[in-house]
Amino acid sequence: MDKKKILLIDDEEDFCFFVKLNLEKTRKYQVFTATDGMEGIRLARQIKPDLIFLDIVMPNIDGGQVAEILLDDEPTSTIPIVFVTAVVKKDELSGRGGKIGGRDFIAKPVKPETLIKRIEQYCPIQKEWRR
Image (tube, rainbow, N blue to C red):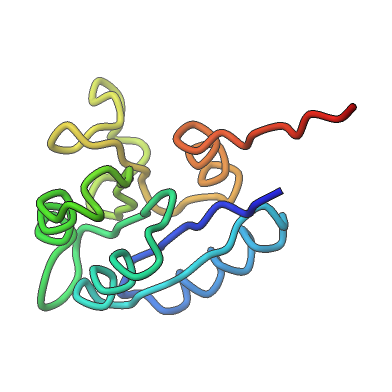
């Protein structure tokens, strides 16, 4: 089974470390991390991940700008992006439907199970056929 490639772009190094640790522990995902937007764009172009988790508030270039650059770039334009942010808290979600600017998002703090559910939503794992 091929592991799904997940790119996490977030300026919080500890958050990146623990997300990578927890997702890779499942043995279903290969997780790449970038702690700034420009590095995230470079990595996205290089590895072409199956899904990108993207923080909104980051220094130098914010997540919204990163998303626009990736969407305008042919090699990365079809990669699903899910914002992961502390800008909106979980208790503020009622009535919003989990969207920011039409994009899916997850409010921090986030549990690994929530990330896995979102990965499975965008990148279903193909079952191997056995004869």
